[in-house]
Length: 126
Image (cartoon, rainbow, N blue to C red):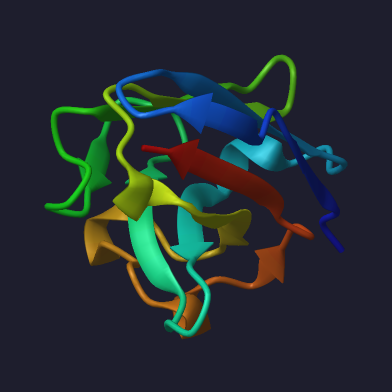
């Protein structure tokens, strides 16, 4: 069982930045592909970014490419999402997720992830 706890959400003005963190309580953290998803009010949960076991490979949704950066520190069992140039369209609850699938399969849908955090709210004001 993997427990995930997100932090770092909050209220920020458009153009600003936030850094989300997700701490995992599992000894085999380095064996999970980690991802970030988000869900805005009235919308379906959508993929944001993912990172491979070692952190050497990443991929992003087109909507955040060039603005968001996913990273991980396996020694700290933590994955991060650095969000820059935020817009009101980025307002959502952000979820951290862990997948047993390898990065080579490019897991980018909710059903490909096995464990989820409780989410952290990000609100971007115009």
